[in-house]
Image (tube, rainbow, N blue to C red; front, side, top):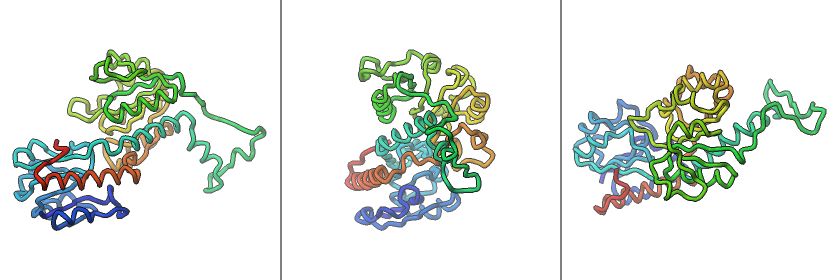
Length: 323
């Protein structure tokens, strides 16, 4: 088998080995591939492994030897799966490898916004031209110049209750949060402590923090817009560790500027990398991390192990994690 990896660097910046794939055939690894290079690099591939490369119908039609596409991610909206299936190509993803890591980032954002950890650490760091070491000049043993809310007793609204959403709910309950979920799951099947919202409006109206954990689909692009933000509590916090395109970033920036939203914590953006003129980059209450929730070493190890297992199962004629 001729195996080609088109954009392997993000998942494996040379701290792991691709060697297990060499047992299945000839392996070529590219760290990054430009759109105009995809056809030339993949033309002889029977097994193609990608991360963010767009596999459109036009691209797939020009790869007659291709039998398998493995995506180094859970989401696969960058692959025209209908076209792949039409051409007899098996497509496999990597489910549930990053659950704990994404949950960790979700609460990192919640706690940073509520406790302002980065704000105080930056005020009292003795580096840079702007260092003022505010604490050293303080007349009391402590100081604070931001609100410091306690999250216990507050309501967390979770939109999407899959593996990650459910785990976020479990951790939230341990923090003493009330948990309301907007989900297709039957309420009788939900763990104790998780209440099903009868409508999205009810969740938005009642939540102090809203956390997005739903997949991106054609019917929910930018669904978190000015209309839905207007239904939220004044000063509520919005967290997005799901997909950037779920939110209208301009509407979120406006809501932050006027104080309707008290904070926006996001690990994903509509366009990645974002453009320099993205309005969220100018908002002091927007806390943006560069799509790293999935990228802990432990999660990437699991990702690669599942990738290797997917390829082995396909070669043995018993593909797993098909989409």
